[in-house]
Length: 139
Image 1 (cartoon, helix red, strand yellow):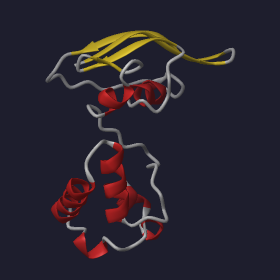
Image 2 (cartoon, rainbow, N blue to C red):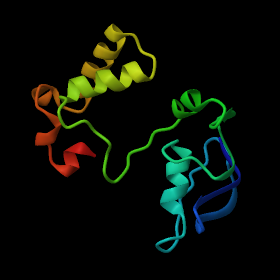
Image 3 (spheres, rainbow, N blue to C red):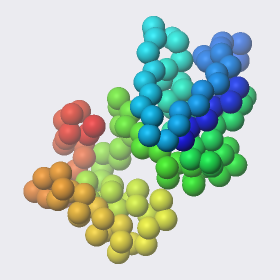
């Protein structure tokens, strides 16, 4: 469940997102449609916790994003057009790093990283630096 209540985003005098109210129930599929500058990407970045709203609140699966950001972010998956990756890490190192950020112990993060890499047929590239990957591979 996602609930957005009076969320807006301003950069000084520029309004990037006018106050928005939205409720998406569990199991519903929702998409953002609109012209350039309508606030679609800004809204998604705020839902993912990448941007902080200027006003309003975001509730994800009952968790207030502003009050409990780590717990709320655990409930969201977000893949931007240009992924935020550390090019000097390998795929295995990066996945282990992210697992540790999300509270996994080192051995569980390592096992989960290897499982994900195997699931996506990437075991032959685990020791390759991310900087060598194409844009599509990074996504």
